[in-house]
Length: 317
DNA sequence: AACCGAGTCAACCGCTTCCAC
DNA sequence: AGTGGAAGCGGTTGACTCGGT
Image (cartoon, rainbow, N blue to C red):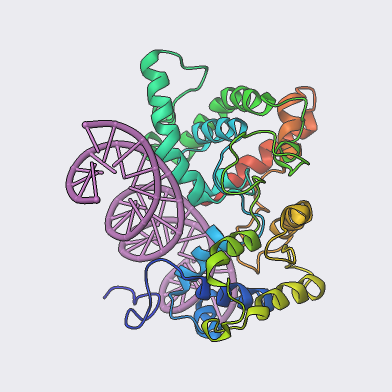
């Protein structure tokens, strides 16, 4: 007898999320936190599977998500982390806190795979060692010990590779600084969807709602009321310590994005209850970079190795 | 204007891992 | 230590968009 479905198949809605549903979910999580995902759909009044809600929140609505326009730096990091970690997208995503595993996975499958293939064919490898050569697919046949030994022997190569990746945009020493929403979006000329490469969930939603909420006079089309959403946002900014990476107007988001992003970082690093992917198990980037750039930092090195080997591989066995 | 194929990405599915009991 | 339920994860799918013909 198989496991029962995670939720009632009957009556659960599937497919793309509507702005209404987004608002309901965000409002609920802003007010209560995700807590038990299983109870979220019912409590939020959504006809969705808990998984679907969780995914929607994590991949789209969560504060601090950066969408599209992967910088060259991020690209390199993904390539090298993929080489180091294999297709462990969640682990890779934990080093790019603004990116979701789904986003990274998609980007890998649609862009980077091809890119690497082309590089491979043209013979210009640029020092990237390919995952196929040593990664998970082959590791499955290895015992834990073998895998770990292999990882340790690879670590030096990975270190070098990561070093390359992270030094791309030096002297902006920290990755955060590279990705920080600085006064101008300097990295991508065609920073598409918005003037800023950053998209808080609020921005995501306001984009989604752009048309939906246009006529404020037609309140009957808005099940929650036009103001309810901003109220939720405004209120939670002040009242909720763990949430609130939202700005306060539907149109002027750029000026608050620094704040939004920084705050979301805190959220990401400090709490799990809102459904954000846990980051406590990965090495802080500053530590990682210290490790990469300071060969003499033995203690740092040891710390990193301990953390990275113990924690990042913890899920494997 | 209509069609088609390729590319993209949000969302689903099913398996694995974690955790409370 | 064993078990069951919930959460997390990665692979895959399918709807949508866009450029070429």
